[in-house]
Image 1 (cartoon, chains in turn red, green):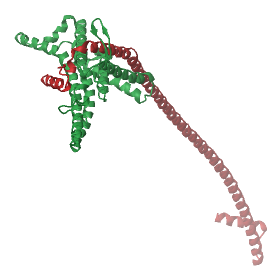
Image 2 (cartoon, one colour):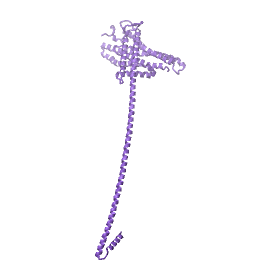
Image 3 (cartoon, chains in turn yellow, red):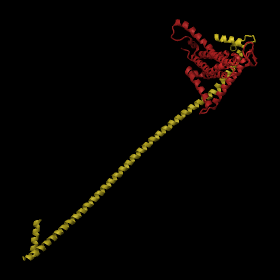
Image 4 (cartoon, one colour):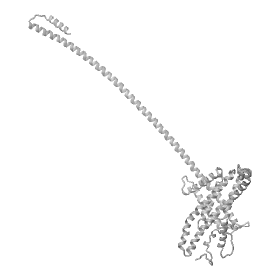
Amino acid sequence: MSLLAFLAETAAHGGEHGEGVKAPFPAFDPTWFASQLFWLAIFFLGLYFALARFVLPKLSDTLEKRANRIAADLDEAARLNNQSVEAQKALELRLAQARAKARETGDKAREKTEAELATETARVDADLARKLETAEARISKLRADAMKNVEQIAVDTAEAMTARLGVKASKADVKKAVAAALEKRG
Amino acid sequence: MNLPFPGFPPMVATDPIHQFKIFSLLEWNAAGYNLSFTNSSFWMMVSTGLVLTILGLAASRGGLIPNRLQSLGELSYGFIADMVRSTAGEEGLRFFPFVFTLFFFILGANIVGMFPYAFTTTSHIAVTGALAVVVILIVIGYGIYKNGLGFFGLFAPHGVPLPVMFFLVPIEIISFLARPITLGMRLFANMLAGHIMLKLLAIFVVMLAGAGLAWAAWVPYVLLIPITALEFLVAFLQAYVFALLTCVYLKDAIHPSH
């Protein structure tokens, strides 16, 4: 305060040169107090009502609207995210199902092929066995036929030999002897 | 040159106090009071009009995505609302429009006063003192309305022994009564001192240059630049301090117990 008083003093002296009147320091001059207070009341209250009635509600309204919008957008984003997660899950499920089905189909196909292969093998085996049998039968028949021919040849040979040797032998005897010899050899 | 040497009439611009003089623009006497529309009234009208125009334009857009001006309005809103909420609590928000108006009224007056030829309405004790008194009256009024006689518990801190009370209560009362004085005086003195300092430096430049010491005039001239910036900071800071202390005092009205 003493500084202010000093300033007021010097200002009053310095500022009022030549007039010779000691005017009060302007900031403390009571001449204008009523006017200052009156116009302060007018402008301050005017500003207060204008701000409180129009400006601030509008600002808070805008801020609230934006906050609501952001919250709503976040909710929407969360909802869409959930949706995508669900879709992902469904996709994985479908994929797993498809894989299982593919495996099943493959298994079935393999089983079927194996079964077919087995029956075919069996059929071929049976066929072969049958063919083998007939072949064996033919072979044994051929052998038997051959043996019969051998006997005939032996008889013919023996007859010719006996005839050459001059031994008299009936055909029946020769035959019998050959038969016996063959019998002996087994 | 019209220089303030003895014998010469003083130049108006070389009087650091001249800027605080009030003069009537429109004479008006009502009920025995001088309610003239003065230069102070005019610049108060300019500052409040400017504040209202800027904030009004900022608010009127109301876009979902704010532009710069709208951001300014919304940041101001958030700034003051946060200050009120953090200082005076949720209940203090009922005084939010008042604190908001207070802050922007003072800020507008301080900033407008920074421009040459403008008048700084907040450099007068009648204005700042009246604002401070209004704040304290609201604090006392709401304190008693809200807490009844419990409001006076503000002067008697809890858990203090009775003998100490005899000393403490008067101290508390004095400190409470000092609030409007310090509140009004702080703003007034800051604006007054700042403007005097700026003016003195500017006068120094003119005087030195006028005395043919142009090289020396550079010193106060360069000094003026940071001090002008500082005064802009003070203009904001004093508005903030005034609003913040208002919130602190309102907190006492809402919760008087220490």
